[in-house]
Structure formats: C-alpha cells, structure tokens
Image 1: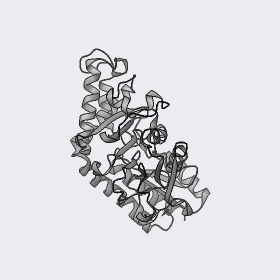
Image 2: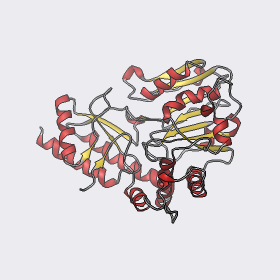
Image 3: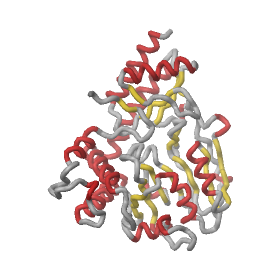
Image 4: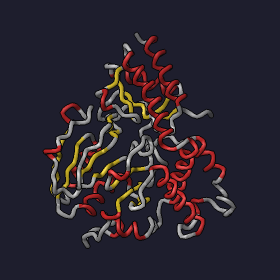
Length: 359
C-alpha cells in the first residue's frame, strides 16, 4: 500500500525517514537486543536517548543555558493548569484569547487566580490576531500568556508582545520547530509533540530557571516543575518511546539544516497554497492575510455540500484528513514540517481539477 498525504492537525504526519529508522530499530536498539519500548527508563541506554534528545532540541532552538528542558506527560491540556499552579505567586495573569485552546487555558487558570483577558478575536470567530495595547497589560502580573499558532482557526502571531519584566508564556504546540524564535524572549514555552515534533504522549516544556521555585504544598508532586526539573524528566516513568521518536525528529531536522532551513520550506509551502486560494474562483481562505498561519490553512467553498464532496473525493485520491474542525467546518490543510512540498503541490493540483469539474 502506498502512503497517503496526511493533512491531519494532530496526531499528524511524521517524516518518512524517521519512521524508517524507528522500523529498523524496533526489535534491537543499537545492539541492546531490545526495543526502546522495552527499556528501563533508568538504563544507560535510555539515559543516552533522553539526553541526546534534549541536547539536540537545545541546539535546534538555541536554548540558553539558564533554561530547563522537560519532557512531560498530560499534553498541553495539563499545562493549562500546571502553568498557573507553578507560576501564579501574586494571583494575577494576563491572557490573549485567540481561539479554542487559549479559551480552555483561560478557563483552567481562573481556578487559581485573577485573569485579565487583554484582547480577544472571538468577535470574528478567531480569524485574526488582535492588536495588543500595552496600556491594558497588568504590570504586576505573574505572567503573560499567548498561543503562538492557532490550529483550528489558522492564525499565528507574526509579532510577539513586549511584556517587560512580566514573563511571556507561550503554548507553541502547533508551530514549535517550524520557524525561528528567540527563546530568551520567553519565560516558558510548552508544546504537545503530536502536531509538529513527534507522536502523541509527550509535551516539551522549556522554562527559565528563575521561574522554577517551591510550589504550594497542595500542588500534586507530579505537577511541580521543580520536581520534574530536579529529576531530569525522570521522576516517574516518562513516555519513553514518544521521547525517542521526538529525538529522531530532531536529528532529521538537524540534517535538513535546522529551523532556519525548515522555516524557508514552510514559507514556500504556505505561499503556494495561499496564492492558489487568493486566485481561486471556488475556494477561499478564512483568515486575515496579515495573521495567516504557516502550519494550518483553513478554507471553504461557501457551500457545505460542495465542501463535503471535496473532502470525500480528496480522500479517495490519497489526500486525507482535510475536513475542517467541527467548530468551524469547511476544510483545513495542516502542512507541518513533515508534509513535503510535493504533498502541497498534489493538493493544489487536485483543487484545480475539482474546481473545473464542479463549476
């Protein structure tokens, strides 16, 4: 069976080269005589795997030495609570509401303190990133929270807010490793792996050391950054195999030339698809041009029946998981790092044919 082009928003496609290495190492990792799935997380073999993964992620993102890198469980959803549990000392934080995931994060954070929603794009179904007015920021906030890329709605920050001495916290789940960021501008970055970094089961956290402190006694031990940092992400059994695959993805990215090279490819893929949408007589994008995502591209025909027909026929032609999120409908092409340029070209060719055949 030939592989399809998988446009899923997550869990999403993985690089074929990575899958091939994992296949070849499935039964015997580097002469250990066992699969990574079978290894003790306390073994020398696994210690090499997790330390190499951390070192490669540090190299790729140019992570300063005063930041800890953690590989945790519970996905981004657990981070929605873990961030305020650990960082909210004065009981106040600023949030920008740019979609479903920031709304969930706001809802969780309100359990732990006063949340100031400084801006929202909900008035236009989150089809843009709102302009931020520093006068609305809380100078005494514990942190300022954003979602850098919005998977469902296809928007992204092209400019980071200037938050002064207030640590900037970012949910980077759907665009980590896709474009260059200056990590030193953030207090904390977290990202669920299953969109652009690896398989489901692990979330990466990059946290500045001064933000790691003793947490209130009622915070569960597993949810304390201090405990996880002191134990090198090995306080309990981590998601060993998911971390191993993430490590292979980091190696793949390094071979490609790192994040600057990947960003160039991503910009090329997105530009091709947006250019087609902007000139199509049938399809149109749904996001304000200045805020368009490089990773998630939603589009519609304006006719629900035609949208459904498009998704069905695309699937039959090996272009799968193009149905838009249930909350917005239409279609969505998620073109993460692992989606080759060829896949985007095939999608555009199919869209052109569909347009001709369904006038």
